[in-house]
Each structure stands twice: as C-alpha cells, then as structure tokens.
Image 1 (cartoon, rainbow, N blue to C red):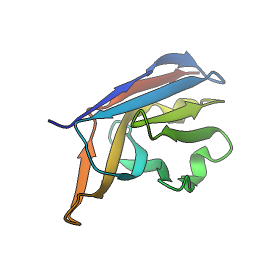
Image 2: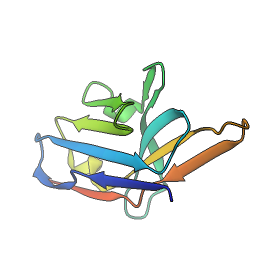
Image 3: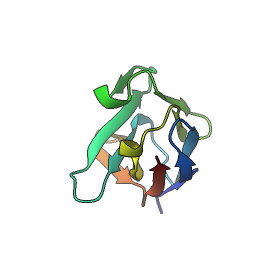
Length: 120
C-alpha cells in the first residue's frame, strides 16, 4: 500500500520559515519526480516546486529565491525549505511523486496535505 505522509506545516509569522517533509512508502520502483503543490482557499491547485531523479529543479515564479526543494532518494523523502514566508503562501501543501514501474507504466501518487498558515 502506497502512502505519502507530509509533515512540518503550521502557523508562522510573515518572514518566518518552515520545512516540509514528505515520506513515501510502499513504492518499490524508481521515483522520477517528487514535487510540492499548494492550494489556497478559493483558488486552484498550483505547482510550487519539483525535483527529478537527477536533481533538476523547477520553481514557481512566486517562490523563487525563497523556497528550496531537495530529496533523499534512500529515504524516499522530499523536503521543501520555505524561507521569508508571506501571507500569500498560506495554503494546503501536498506532495506528489511519479515515475514508471518495471513494465514502463506511469504511476502517480498524492499525499493528503499539510496546512501552512502565514500571519501578517
């Protein structure tokens, strides 16, 4: 059974920092891409950051220079270091992983999300 468990969310003041973590279990194939998405109330889910097996990263313009994504392949864990947080970063943050199984079939899994709230 595949599980993605996020942690590290919470309430922080503007300018503060949080570090999110997402641990994947039950996946026995290579995880190609690990990513973080967020969804604020009344808004569509948006991609925040992603990292590939080769450690290539991509960030939303709104978080560039403030957020850093990293991964530990041995632990099947992806992290999101969030610095200089702003009230507009308030959202539910969810992790996403995808790749291909041994037959080449695409798979994708989502975590349930962790709440991040930034007060002004």
